[in-house]
Length: 146
Image (cartoon, rainbow, N blue to C red; front, top):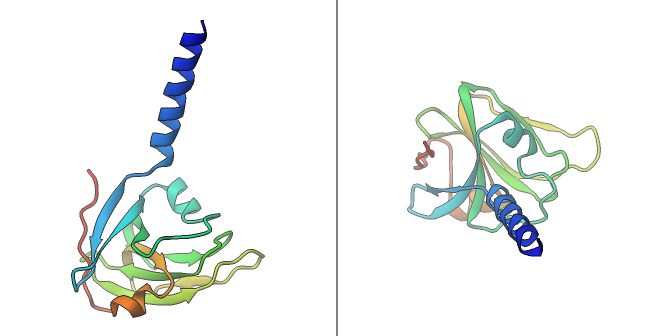
């Protein structure tokens, strides 16, 4: 009986770890630097984003993927870290940038919005835009999981 319980617990733990550790995609900046990004491609994943995280490694990010292009608005509610936010068009070119956006722990939180249509939004640790010399019009490279 104990062996069966142990097996069930181990299986549940493995499943939880698999779910908790989202798949990562590689994103390549124009000058060749590569990072790993989580993909937020469902309403639930997009809603939670990077909330409640206290750090984001310099070579990591989160890519928000939408079903259609729009002037997507972001806020930093319950986000503990400052971020650079890049809005990307259908062609994966940067159409708008907000740098060093602070986290927000109290309402009302400011909203950040592109002045151009975007299909993707990439959140990166604050300072990445300056360090990597990213600018509007630059094209990022990535392939989404099937």
